[in-house]
Image (tube, rainbow, N blue to C red):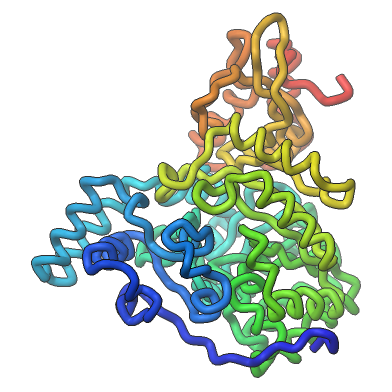
Length: 471
């Protein structure tokens, strides 16, 4: 443990919708307000631990406190009719199956798996789908260990909410690493594996080791980086500092570093308060001392961090602690998006305002970025060409790797909240549209070869809006 930061160990205690009313701080709310929270929690996942309750939420500011908005069910997360329907069932003491049935009806209207996750991202190996994996971009494979399909606390905006609400046919999870290892041996183009969930850091170290150690073998030396997507640094920093196997975890991190692989924790920090406690700061220091990099990312979330001051403050604090600002995402088109989403034009202005307030060390952050069906699309700027106001967009990643770093233009629209809301500029079609439609029809993202349909389309149609930055 870092010598200069004292952390008091605490026992992990969690609350869910089953015992939400036992949280003492909720006594300040009326019976009707608590009932509305319980109604929302029947549809969308709720789980919060007492570290978040005690140390991150300012109860004198609720319900407007950003961490309360981030972790507790809000009535506005459901449409009025849906909320009233769930409240009515709870009031009249409906049986569990009736409540579950109505919740499932609502859940299926919320676009449970956006951006082609089920249709396009699941890889094939020897004629079979590989359980618990996604392979959307050539160089990166996502792996969902089954023991990591929960979080210390759930974020109210979470785009992976179907993992937590019993939609088993929509859940990504793998019990063993064997399928992942076999797949990776046949795919030398992959150089990075991202363990995700849920949150892999809910696993004990001995379980996490089962998934990481096989990636360190010589026959997988093309895997140069291992990433762990986690919110634990924010929601349960004790995992890295004072849990009973924290020392073992740091030893595992050191083994990855000693094996010549890069280990990066993709830390979800949504607000600077998450970096303010002694435990949070000790966790960052200890992870870095074990040879891992911390890269910080979060979506832009209305009611939580839709303010340039918040982002500039958060980036500055990350830099001070030695973490790397990495991504500002656009809230995905799933779940309670209507409550959290921000128009793209406003998102770009917030990012730009915050970006101008930090030094070059903070300008490692990219955004606002949409993880959309064709790929990861960055709002690069707002400009005017031939008298038409436009969004300048760029692929950071694409289902076809040749799309990466390519620029294209969309008509400026102050109300648009997602790529699907935009229209191509200059009367054109999206230059990637035809190839993406072929992928959707075949159910595959393509073979990542260099003989790209895109190159042919560029040559055939002369799409000036899809050109490399250097022309």
